[in-house]
Image (cartoon, rainbow, N blue to C red; front, side, top):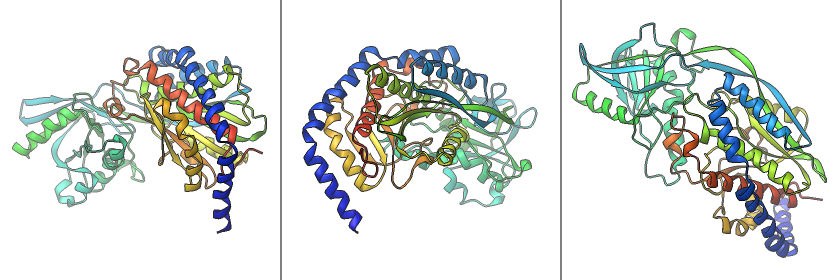
Length: 467
């Protein structure tokens, strides 16, 4: 109880003693950061190289290793105090030849539909798989069925994202379970395959892939799983209503390979007052093998690198150690995030604050904080500084997949919140390309990230004040 009384009083003292500095000195610094990003920003050119010269960066692929080499090389050129690679073993999944699927209403009468194997899926039998198909609305729909309803059939998960959510991530968790767990749940009921509606609000013919897991199923119960485009999901659903006994065929040659070595890419600027305390900025370096991984998460990678460049070029001398981490294997395993967190615990490195960018390079709207109510109240004193940049949304919520393992009761982990309306148009799809990234929006996101890091570094947090 005493602690709860002391913290608000300390905040009152802080706000009383520092309002002029926060409003004037800091507003000048934020203006410098934004000007630097918008005039001299390097993030878009870095992203151009990653997307056009390297391309997709699926964990374990040649592209992923080229991205490791390139980003380390570029961080080396920023003259940080230290840049290094952190070894991590990652899964290697190979898609194989392009997938093929059709709906058959009678022998020889077929309608071709667009599918893509889900990441981690096994292949179909040689020559493909043809079977009857049953439609369900998500995992909850499947659980209403008996084994006799499902056995020997392909399960078609057709739960759509709810368009009523203004913040589109609000329904992602409710929908994505059919993609990640559909094959696991369907196999237990004797299904022979799974077709999943793409997780996107957009109706188009491009399938959206993504990860799935068989969890603890034995190998002989693995069944092939693929995403179908939303347009063709609607076609399939309509045809099933007219002819429930139609057949569905699909062929894919995807398979898992033995794990391979990869790396997290890390760089840091040493702190001058509290060098033992870490402020981390990061994103995931890997991507799915469809498209170029421009928004997911090339944008976050280059924004994180840009934060470090701007701090160096603005001659800012941080009080805490500021570290950039480009995590490997977020998309199909989070091995890089777990490895980094394990090493941080092993080395007893207190990570007092972290920010992750993994929602695309769209216009920043603010931040989502995983922290206590007291910490959020402390952070909200800085909201007015972000108003001129339309990035003053400060809310409690999810931080990020890769920095989540760093969350402690006494620290703050943060996600950059962006305008999410277009994100699921391209998420995990062939349409995630550089041409759909706005240079200006990308730069504004990097500036917002650098600004919040500057403020936390200068003033500290409730649990880690600057002495």
